[in-house]
Length: 237
Image 1: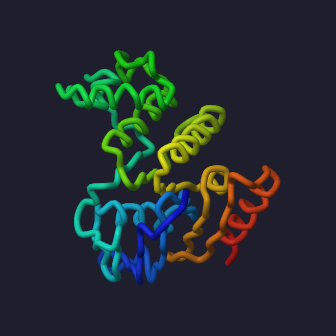
Image 2: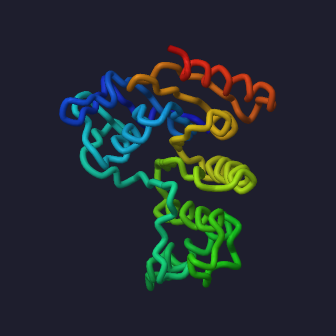
């Protein structure tokens, strides 16, 4: 369910020395909304995600979450990256609980393994898992702290087409179940149309086009039409 505004970006600019990556970004994201940022490589998508995560400061402008300025690490957000970043010397369960002796942590970790359909893999090590299974563990780990905001930085980019499609469905289902506010970074406009409630196209360092998807009510042909509209905008001069 989408309710009140959670994230507000006002006139946000990010520069590195003389190079401006983002400029004059204005954006509102509501609680429970799934928003996808799409655009060409180097267009500023991942930089924008890093600003929202508090991993980097904006050069100008204001970013707020729940009405509070994002200054430093955004502790109620979690990021899932393209590489799984699992610790190879720990089992799947340990990667989630970090060997915590807290029984509640262990129970939470096992519940999340059930959620990502890896119930029987708790005692496996990362080198015993497929790429898709590793990303499921990474997703579960991102959910361990019950974040208010889930940030997905091209998490499916390295997967084969079939595994990627299954992961798209799994992530979208979990986001719905948990009512998670989610931001997805992707180059794949069809992936964005399949998973998100709204697509924001980033072009020339700013938000140039916003398209609602209504994925729960939209058939495949309509999603393809949305994807084509976004792609044409990104590729136009």
